[in-house]
Image (tube, rainbow, N blue to C red; front, side):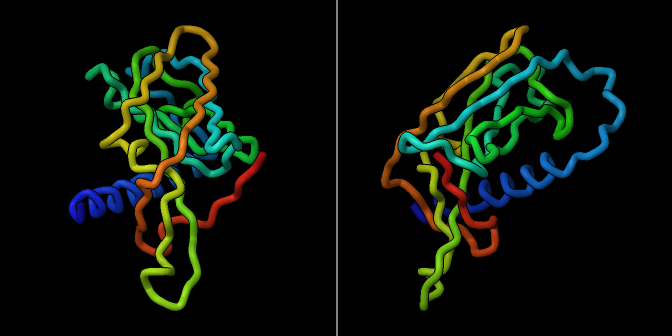
Length: 168
């Protein structure tokens, strides 16, 4: 179980860095020649029946030819994520994807263990565990993903992400 927690911590740090890059793209670089056609994709995330802000949404292509094009984003105050590809371009290529999610919560306490942030998304939604899939089609794609709870959450290193903001 220790190894799985360490892997989960590393993945959470990677996802945080990925999100920082996704949200920091202000001016688009020239479109790569081999970038596939992108289709508008909007994903709304609920957890425990509530829309959730600041959830990292990661689309992992199943087809090998699409794996070079990273897609994902972060939910806004209404729990909606406008998917971007290659960190900047609106939409996602047509194809099958596995979905992963991440959201962390800061905690306060007197002991170091009590102060480590806690994942608010169960481990079954992490990239190495997720079984959720969706298909992007050559049209406007809108999805509502209702994540369920679970006890399988894990602590991650302090400072990995800012605290959560739950919205209805």
